[in-house]
Length: 239
Image (tube, rainbow, N blue to C red; front, side, top):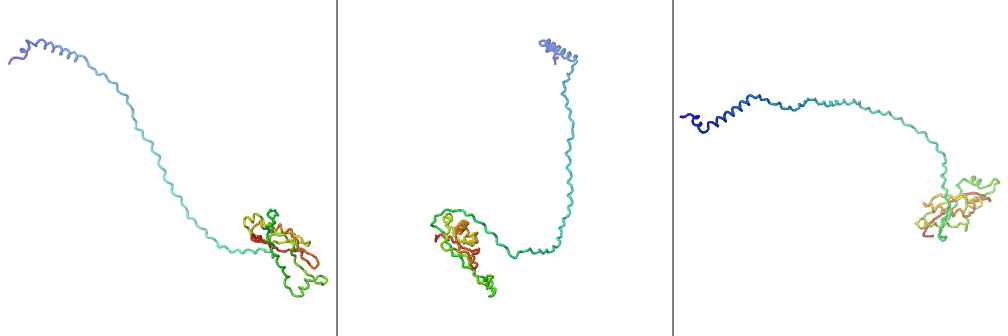
């Protein structure tokens, strides 16, 4: 077997040798030149510190419940009955004053009027023994006297006019009046003894009776002041 050099020398020997020499020089030159790696710029170091988080405040322990003493109900002491002193009751209680009614005029047709009922029969004197009754009916001289009850004078008692508002509303009723008869036969104080239930009817009756004329009560031969009750009936059917 022939050597490889001798076989390549005729055609490629010189170029190959030159190429090897050039590469060898380059490699040698590179090996001779010191090679330093440039330090790369190091990134800034960030310091990280572990900081303990603030511990949350400890919840305060619940205070023990206050000691509540049981409430003792007071034992009620026995109450002694108190006897109220009897109030002083007067022997006679005066009747309440009747309200005075105003005499306001109400215009109504004159043909419509209320009925006037006849006055009650005069009450007789209380029963007494014979001597007591005789002494009551005698004057100081010993003569007998007579006491008569006042009464309305015939023909001098115009009937009250029926108020228009009462007729339109259909109001009816009977009012009883307490009439003071003066010694001259005129009416003094006229008050409502029992109302009809409608002030307008009561007012009309009072107004009419105040204009009446009476035969006064007589004590023997002398007229005296007295009081009579007169009922006045308001009735739409008979008006």
